[in-house]
Length: 116
Image 1 (cartoon, rainbow, N blue to C red):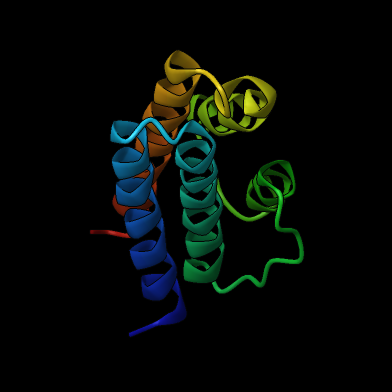
Image 2: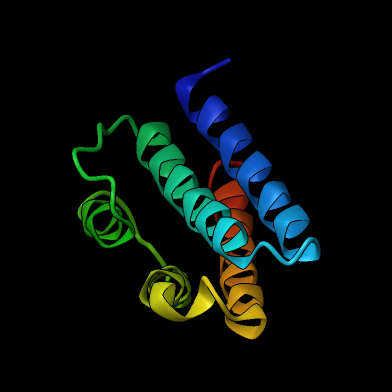
């Protein structure tokens, strides 16, 4: 399996873990796994385009992606919104659900971009 494929698998697993943690009301872990899913997904696209990534934050990865490919504005907004709600989502079900929804949007774009 390619490195980008492994990162996609990690993104999918993180999103599933986020949903499972949400169900058990472990909002801090659910949010963290949603954020991880976005990070893995963005890294997968960079790897898919043959670019190495030097950043690990969502904002840094978006910046690197903008220099590599066309990244739709709605994906940028979804990823940044999830990152920006960290202080709220760790203790709030509604914000946590929004972060998971944003991670799902990003993952769908990642899969589409990579031809899955």
